[in-house]
Length: 240
Image (tube, rainbow, N blue to C red):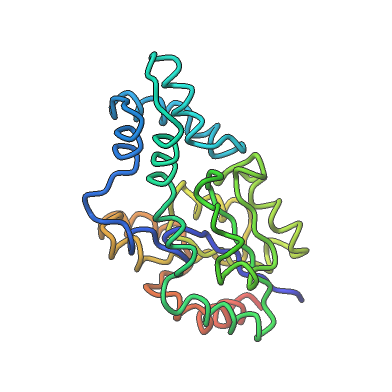
């Protein structure tokens, strides 16, 4: 039976917080670059977040349209600076994944596992993906901006499984739990659902209480990705 591991991307395989200064807010910095009120941009961003995540609309285009609506004149260099603020640390994370990630995925592939990535991401988030050392190791990468559907929608999971050519029962999902992705994977019928805690917990994006709550939707919890190969074999044996 063909087996697959499907990974979330950010805070699972690549962690922007490893590169982002603690006091850096990309909306605030992008807003400042074009001369918009950050509170206004935040509201506009949240109102349009799902559309941006499930379409090829560039986030900086949202800023450009908002500037036009507000009568703010910003030059092209300002929009370039805003775009850089939005995506620079995602770029860094993709080009320098979490230590041990590349080696772990290589080991899974050697052991016969197919590898997928399923990520809720806008187009700027994953601009550097083709240059990432992760890209050639992944059999199928589905990004919500190109697929038009985002986790935890069942169609997001079925899409990546269909392209991998595996059943849900033969697949393991691994993620940090954002976007209710673990419950979505469970509902989609994945044979195993694994919560990876280290990157988000270490970056302060999750609290121990958050982890305890997310763990209720997982079959197992690991701190570091290097724990995964042994765990996947153990879970696969349990399912036989």
